[in-house]
Length: 222
Image 1 (cartoon, rainbow, N blue to C red):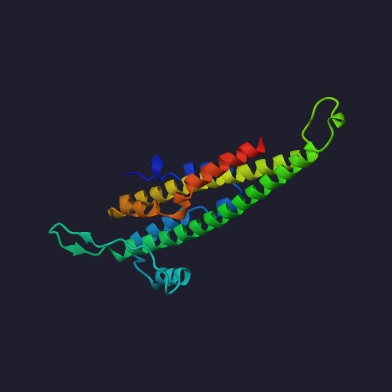
Image 2 (cartoon, rainbow, N blue to C red):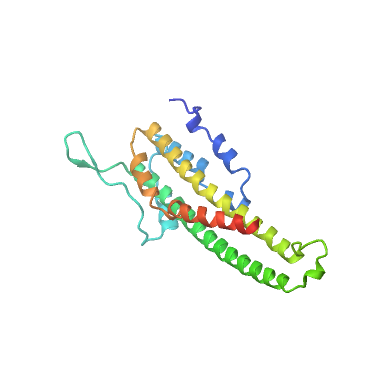
């Protein structure tokens, strides 16, 4: 299968993240880096080196528990270990998944706190505005400058919350895509097994809660 096919093309990925805030882009899956690792694994002149193993140890730490594919049944029914190349590749993915988990969870919590803060600010501003006598509004009540500033700040927060949902969806697809490329080029079959693991990760499981909170933020911004 040619590498120019759409599911191997990185254009969709760059198109999808082009409008993201810079901080979000920096946390996305490093497509090119992982693709180069596949090239490295397949290059007979390079083979396995201590460099990749040292990188994994440095990034994950001695005591870290990394996802490792289980032994797979062979044709005769006995178990055989997957190649070291495959486990090194999934270990690299583990590090990226952990990094995305940490980024999304911390960002989501900060946004949730900001949303609650803006809601309290709006309630207080509306309370103060109601204390103003109707005579002060000869043409009917209008939104105060303070309320308008709170509304604009809340809307900006909504855009960041919405982009975080997009971040989750894009990186889920990106992981699946790079796994499919890995399988196609190496002859392994790890995509479905690894994606089951990905589905349990925070950057995926938090999505439903993020959607609900983002909708509430939009309502608050209206």
